[in-house]
Each structure stands twice: as C-alpha cells, then as structure tokens.
Image 1 (cartoon, each protein chain N blue to C red):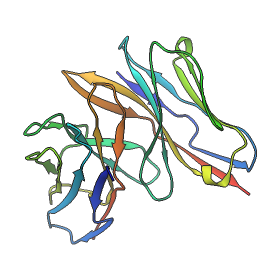
Image 2: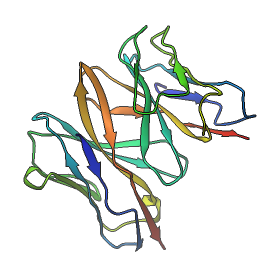
Image 3: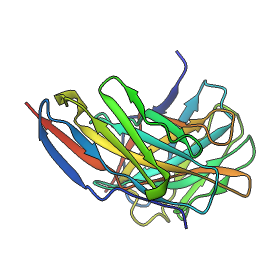
Image 4: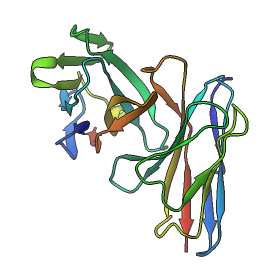
Length: 113
Length: 116
C-alpha cells in the first residue's frame, strides 16, 4: 500500500539528548514537510523540502535539523537546543503540482523529560 | 499576510444534528487553494477536500458539504445528520506559494464532539 510511515508512534527521551524522527513515503512525491502540533493547537511548519538535497526552514525551525538524501526519506532531528521539544510531530508529502493537497503520516508523539 | 481563522474552538452537538464549521481566510494571491482536513483521535490528518479560487460552486459529498464564498473570504464546512464517528478536530488550510515553494497555512482547528 502507498503511504507515509512515521516511526515510532511514541518516543521518550531525556532532556539534553538529540533524537531523530523517521518519515518514509512510497508515494513518489517530491515535496515533504514536517509539522509540530501542541495540545489544542494547530499545525506549525518546521521544515520542508521540495526535492532531494534541498530543504527550507519553516516558521519554527530553531532547534531542529533535517536532511533529504533520498526522495523517500525526510528525517527530522530534534536537538538539545530545542527548548520545548515535547509535542506531536507530523510528516507530510505532496504530489506533483504546486497546489495539490498534502498527505500525512500517523505522527510521532515525543515526550522529553 | 496569509492567514486562516477558525473562530470556533469547540462545538458540541447531539447525534443527527447538522453542524457548520466556519473558516475565514486572508490572502494576497489571486490563485490559491483551500483545504479541509479531519484529525480523528488517532492523530493522523485525513484530507477531505480541495477547492481552487476560481471555482465557487458548492460541493457535496455524502453528508459533507462545503460553501465557498470569495466575497466574504469564507470556506465553511457543514456536516448533515452528524454521527459519533464525526467527532474529531477539523482544520481548514490555505495554500501559499512563495519563492517557488508551496506551503499550507493552517487554522487553529475546531474540535467537534458529537454525542449519542
């Protein structure tokens, strides 16, 4: 089945540790996105990538880093510099055409203590 | 600046009631798309509809309908005869193309609770 996978569903880390969230898609989409969602709030864009080896900062990129070495994969690293990393993280991809809809993965809930 | 406002934070209805979720947007673009997504308790966002700025025709899909009015910059979503399975957070979103990059601007979401 085509889709977007994010693993794991729940992730727990100690403060001061970097952690990498996985996002893989087999939809052959060029564009991929990372969002953060806090309780009771909407989605905020962290990073996005239009094609392989290209990515742009979104609205809240500080404390995060990404790579896009393969079309299928867009991992997000939450660094120790991110002051409040506990949140729900959603990955999405978009098919060809500038104004097409984005499709979302199931999300990863990260808890940092 | 591009902006999407969903003024209703939470709505509570009893099953079989009709309910309308409001969405108001601001954009400088002449060509744009609007979207609605559903986020059930599992967390994954489910795409519901895309509407382009040149098509103001209302759309109906089963119990769902959408009313796009450019004159008031609104794209409202109505669920007819609501069911418990409709309980979710609903997001309205607006496309933004800047510097050749495409992004979505999301509203804060409306939490809909449908009670039996």
